[in-house]
Image (cartoon, rainbow, N blue to C red; front, side, top):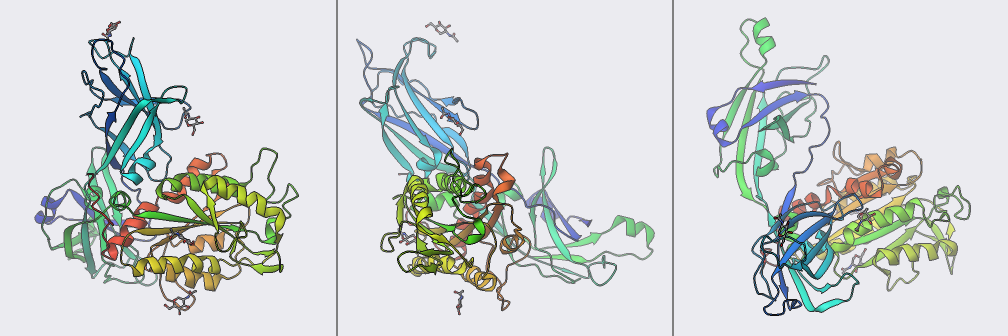
Length: 528
Ligand SMILES: *[C@@H]1O[C@H](CO)[C@@H](O)[C@H](O)[C@H]1NC(C)=O
Ligand SMILES: *[C@@H]1O[C@H](CO)[C@@H](O)[C@H](O)[C@H]1NC(C)=O
Ligand SMILES: *[C@@H]1O[C@H](CO)[C@@H](O)[C@H](O)[C@H]1NC(C)=O
Ligand SMILES: *[C@@H]1O[C@H](CO)[C@@H](O)[C@H](O)[C@H]1NC(C)=O
C-alpha cells in the first residue's frame, strides 16, 4: 500500500481539519463507530417519608455494572429538600452501546446530613434496569423496591432518555483524474482515506471502496457523520480540487507536475436520523431465530455433537441464542420471538423441512423471551431427525416477506433481524446469495453465528465486508446486511464479546436503511 498526501486548498481547511489520502492496494481494518451519549433524567413520585418533622430530602445515585461483579457508582444527583416527588435537575450522561447489555441501578436516599454524605442516610428504594430498556421505551416508569425486593410504599421512579449527539452527516461525491500508475502490471486500484485531527494524531475517519484498475476513478457517493469527520460547524457545500503530490517522485523527476487530481463534486452537510431517533421514536426490532438441525452437527445424544447439551446445560447453540437474544430483547416490546429450525425431518410426515417452527406450531411460532426460545429448542431436539441439506434461502425469504410487507407501509416502525446459528456447511449457496441480495433492499439484517470447527469460507463470503455480495446472476446487494462470526473465536473472550462483535454494526444498518428510504421515526423522538 502507499499514500499520497494532498496539498490543501484553503477552503477545505476551513471546513474541517481533515487530511485526505489516496492509496492503492488493500484497505486495512474497518473504522470503529463513534460512541453515542445518552442523557438520563430522573424523577420520583410518592417517595416514603422518613423524616419525623418534615418530608424526606431525596438524592439519587446511579450505579452501573460494566464487566466486573460489582456495581460502580457513576454519578449522583443533587439533594432536593423536603420533597416526596422530586424532579432532579442533574442528568446522567452515559456512553451508549447497542451491542452490550448495560445494567443500571438507581438508588434513592433521604439525606439527613448537611454535606450530602450517605452516612446515616435512609434508603428510599431502588430500580434496576438496562439502558436498552430505557431507550426503547424512551420514558420508563417502574415501582421502587426495597433491598428485600418488596415495594417501597407507592414510590415510583421515571427515567427519561435523550440522545446527546450531533446527527449531521456530510454527503460526498468524489472522483479523481490521471492518478499515477502504482501497480507493476496494469493500472492502480485507488481508494481514498479521510483523516481527522485528534490530540493523539491523525485518525482514520472514512475510507472509500477500492475502484479496480482505474486511474480516473469515480467513487460511489458516501456519507460520513460530521462527528467522525470533525467537530466543526460549517453548514455550506464546498467544491474543491486537490493536486496529489508525491514528494519522493517530485525530487527525483524533473518536470513532475502531480500524481493526479482529486475532484470533490459534492460535500454537503445534512441531518440524519440516528438509530436512537428511530428506537425512541417507536421503531421495533423484530428478532427471528433460525437453528441448523442438519446431520453434519452429529447425533445430539453423543457428546461429539454440536447439539449435545452437556450436564451444565450448555452447548454453543444455546450460548449464541442467549448472547445475541439478551441484547436484542430490550428492543422488542412483546418479547415474543419466532424461532425456526431447518434441515431436519419432522413429525408427523418425516419430510425434510427448511423452516419449521421449533415449537411445532405453525400458526404461532413465537417463544416467550430468550428463555422460551432456549426451552423450545431443548424440547425440539429429541423430536426431530437431523438430516439435510443445509438450505438458508427458505428462512431468509420467510423473514424477507414480512420485511417487504413492513416496507410497503412506508413507515420505519419495524426492522427485522434474523439470527442463523449453523455449523456452516451450506448447500444452496446461489439461492442464498439471491435471497440476501433481495433482502438488502428491505428493513432487514442477518446475523450468522458459525458453531463448531468447520470451514467457514462460504459464510465469510456472504458477509460482504470486503467487497459487495452479488447474486449468481451478478446483481449487487444494495448494502451489507450480513454479519458473520465463528463462535470458537469467542470461547475465551466470553459470549458478551460474541454479541458485541455481531451486533456492533446493526444500529448503523437500521439508521442508514431508513434514512436512505427517507422514512422518519414513527413518532417525534424528542422526549415529552
Ligand atoms: C455484573 O455483571 C456480571 C457479568 O455480567 C455478573 O456476573 C454479575 O452478577 C453482575 N453483578 C450484579 C450486581 O448484577
Ligand atoms: C459529612 O458529615 C458527617 C456528619 O453528618 C460526617 O461524619 C462526615 O465525615 C462528613 N463527610 C465529609 C466528606 O465531610
Ligand atoms: C416478526 O417476524 C416474523 C417473521 O420472522 C413474523 O412471523 C411476525 O409476525 C413478525 N412480528 C410482528 C409483530 O410483525
Ligand atoms: C429476488 O427478487 C427477484 C425480483 O426482484 C425475483 O425474481 C427472485 O425470485 C428473488 N429471489 C429470491 C431468492 O427470492
